[in-house]
Image 1: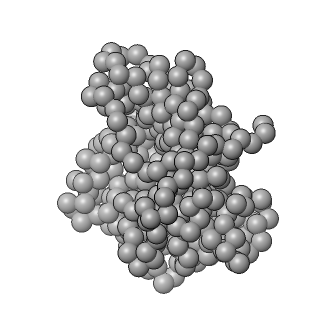
Image 2: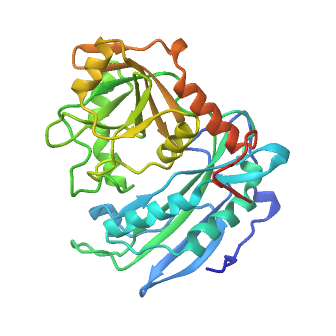
Length: 353
């Protein structure tokens, strides 16, 4: 599809804010502009890039009551010679529309999602902080905006993209509790979709785990609480006897992470055997007791690769000597080097701006 140039309402120079590299907060600091578009009468219209500002929505707006909301998380980087790149946004675009279909929301055309994102990032490229583990976080999202109280799909929707500078995230090794009571997703549910409700429902079990001294939970399957699925906000990988094992996507209860997919490809490039399959708690514990469980780590957009220092199955605690970790540090370095241009982008993942 041919690209479109979205109308841009420029702010007066004196109103523009600028990146303070020493004083920004991931998740709270935002750039000057945002992209906004509306779905009305069966088509996307009113697309514009304009000043970041509050929305005006009626109290009866559907998203507040029935949960039709989806989002994505993407990152842009500034690499060698200040070249700006976005990491694998096409995969996020595909997943966004998969989520939209599952939540009975309209799909978003490529010109709006991809071209709009590139245009917005180009405008705001001075907000990309330089340095290791620094990036510009890109948050596309869609909400139901029909001012109607009643259980049915909304007829109106709003698509937006906002941006914010991001520094190192989740840098401390994590302590994880295996969750066997509460459930994140069930077969036939919405576990594979990136919708707001999945995250809202996860908060209570995570807080309970934090009160016990853990950072996050490792979700297990809803039917038996026997097989591991994913960690809080990221996919999870285990190194057992030299092989990398990550939970399968087959049941539709695990998010199809873009970083997960990238990690699998790169690990295989590096010569590791990677298995995507069901992995039981029993197999993990047995591997630990026999000394074959070497590493556990999470992979996701926000933190890229997160090291796990402790994994607990009830009272049985598995500690890991991170100084002996090999796979996770190599993977993190390779991913970061590709993103900032220190290593060749052999898979064509970087979209240059």
